[in-house]
Length: 399
Ligand code: PLP
Image 1 (tube, helix red, strand yellow):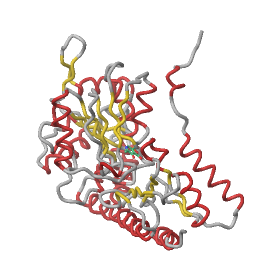
Image 2 (spheres, protein in one colour):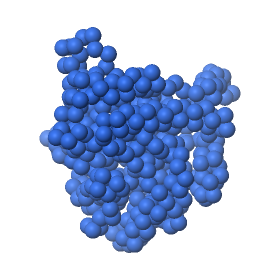
Image 3 (cartoon, protein in one colour):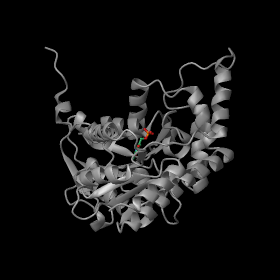
Image 4 (cartoon, protein in one colour):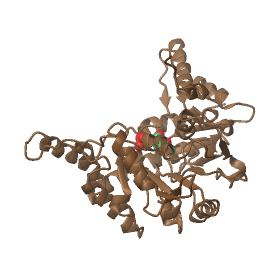
C-alpha cells in the first residue's frame, strides 16, 4: 500500500509567512488606502550589477553558437568558477582551500538542507534557537528526532553556549539570520575546539559573509586553526550579489574532513558529497555560473560592495529608528537584519499587529524562528531607501 513519509507529520506548518501574509491582506481589505511598508522581507531588492549582467549576456550568446554551446555542466561546478572562488575568497585571505574542495550549487538553502543525507540517521544535532528553519526541518524530514536547541537570547548576547549534551552535528550561522549577530575569532574558535574535542562536525552557514565590515570577525570558519578537520562552509551569492532569483551558491568541504562509519573506518565527506551531488543533480546552468564568475572579479566586487553597503545603511537607519522607541536591538552592523526587543507587555505577534495598525509597517515576529525568538522582532535592511526613511519617520510616532 502506498504511504507517505510520516516524518512529514512531525513538521510544524509553514505558519510564519502564511500568517504574516494573511494578517497583512486582512488589514489591506479593511484599509484599502493604507501604504504598507514591508520591512519583513528576507529578499534583496536591488537589481543585478552591470558586470554580472554582462557575464550573463555573454554566456547567452555563447549558448547560441555551435562552437561555444554547453550541455550538462559538471555537477560540482565549472573549473573557471571554482578557481576564481578559491583564489579570491580563500587563497587571497591566506586560507588554503583548493578548487576541488569547492562545490557550486543553486543555493545555500538546498545545500544546508541536503547535507544531512551524508550522516547517520542516529546522530544528535545541535541547532541554535531562533534559527533559519531549514536546518531542523530537513533533519525532521529525514526522521531525526535527537535535536538539541541552543538558546540565543539577550542573556548570552545571541551567541549560543557550548551544549552539555554532546551533539554530533552542529549548525552555526554567522552573521546570523534572524538575530543579525556576528561572531568574533575567539567565539568561533571555541566552537571549533569543542567540535574537535567531541569529534563533531560543524556546518557553518556563511550566507551573510559579505555584510561583515568589522575587524576581528572571521569571514570564513577556515580562518580558525583546526577547522579544516571539522567544518563545512556554505556561501551564497543570494544576498551578496543579488542572486536570490538567479540562484548560485557554493559549499566548501576540505579534503581533511573525514567522518567514520560504524566500523570506525574513516570516509572523506568531500567524496560523499560529490557522490551525492553527481547522483542527484545535473549542476548549475553555464549561463548562471558565467554571471556568478563576474561577481568575483575586481569590478564585480566593487559594484556589489556598494549594494551591500546600501542595505547596511538601511539597516543602520532602522536601528536608529528602533532606538528612538527605547528598544534594544542586535544586528544592523555586519548584517542586513535588525533583531529588536518588543515593547514590554507585548508578544512578538502583538507587536506585529500594533506596528501594522499604527505605522503600516510589516516585520517578522521573532517567535516564528523558534521559541527563544518570543519577545523579539526581525526587521530587514532590504528595501528602497525612501521606504526605509519613511518607515523610520512612522516608527518614531509608535505609541
Ligand atoms: N542561509 C541562511 C541563513 C539564509 O537566511 C538564507 C536565505 O534567506 C539562505 C541560507 C538561503 O540562501 P540561498 O538563497 O543561497 O538558497
